[in-house]
Image (cartoon, rainbow, N blue to C red; front, side):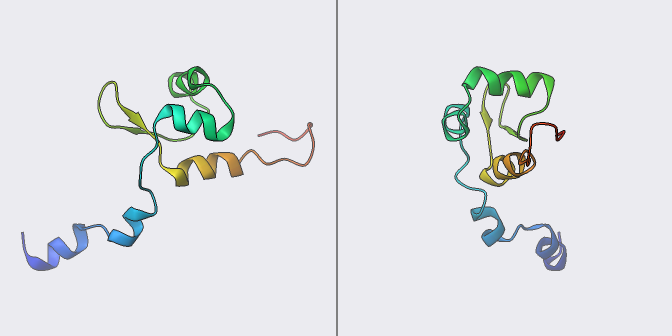
Length: 82
C-alpha cells in the first residue's frame, strides 16, 4: 500500500474520538429512559438507534447515533408523525 493510499484510508482520530467510548445496551436504555428489552426489540424489528455489531452477542451504540435518533423524534404535538 502506498503512503498516499494509506492517507486516504486512515480515519481522522478527532472524528473517531467523537463516537467513543461506545455504550452498551444498558447504558443507552438508561440514558433515553427505555428498557434494554425495548432496545433489543428495536434491533430485531427496526425503529431504534443505529448500533454497532461487534460480534454475534456484543452490541454497542455510538452517542452520535443515539443523539440523531432522539432528535428525529422531536415533535410539536401528538398528531405529528415520526
